[in-house]
Amino acid sequence: VLGSERTVFFRDSSSGQLVFSYWIAKTFEAFAWLPIYTAAFVMLGYSSDAWLIQPLSKYFAFLMFDLVGFFGFGMLASLLVGPGSAALMALVFGLIVAIGFSGTITAIGDMSSGMQGFTKCWFLFWSTQGICSSEYDRYTYAFDIERLNAETPDSLSTDFGEGESVVGAGVGKGFDLSDSYSKNLGLCAVTAFIWHIVVLWVLKTKDYKKQR
Image 1 (cartoon, rainbow, N blue to C red):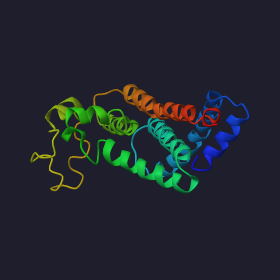
Image 2 (cartoon, rainbow, N blue to C red; image 1 turned 180 degrees about the vertical axis):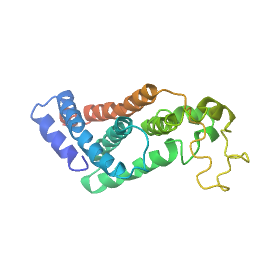
Image 3 (cartoon, one colour; image 1 turned 90 degrees about the vertical axis):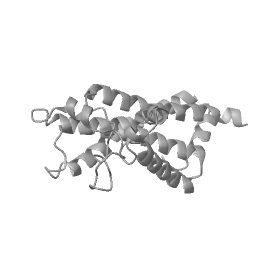
Image 4 (cartoon, rainbow, N blue to C red; image 1 turned 180 degrees about the horizontal axis):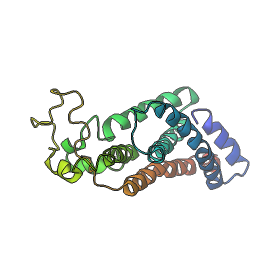
């Protein structure tokens, strides 16, 4: 990823390699290495007891599928632009997704219904909501989460949710904390893997046999 992927793909496809076989190999390679990268990051995160209170397995799963999605971005960048610009393109696109579609920087409760639906098409939204839900689940003995959801205003424009009054206020407004871990993780995985399907489509359109 982020190298001369187009050159490698053209070389392999020109020698008779099937596009689907090439995609399968690249995808399996990603799924072989990404758990290792995730484990390295999680080891840093759990070096402090105060950082995360949710079970290690839940945080690991959400983070790994986030990396699956971002790996798809990297593959697309490597196929669409040259090696000198691929890393920058993947970084910029990743930042746009993180800022616009995680539901934190821009509270999903403030979005229009159409924008909310579009935001829920991104893996970062489901991983962020899932991580938040897993954190709150640790306090179910002390807090009524359903009542918190019902009484917390979705909009940052209310007195309760003004972002300017308290640092971090309003972040995550609109998250459904009652969604199950399985639902959040499943939708995170599906929306992350969709980007690898997009990679397959791009590979099909750039098949060497079609370029001749």
